[in-house]
Image (cartoon, rainbow, N blue to C red; front, side):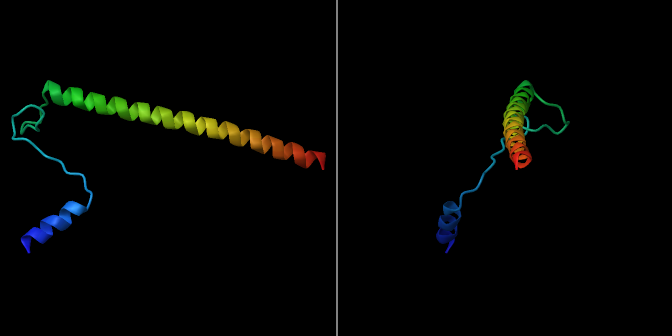
Length: 81
């Protein structure tokens, strides 16, 4: 019965986080301070998020511009009629 539970759980894709012992590099510390590795990792994640948001904003601006062109074309077509 136990092996079936493991087999079933392995079939379901899920994100798994593994944590190291307290005090090791990158591990959360009890006093709330961070080591250089944790700070660097957070900075890299923040940079990735900012870049992704920048790309999404550029895509939205492009779509807005295209929608503006379509709207202008429709308004011109209505004026001609």
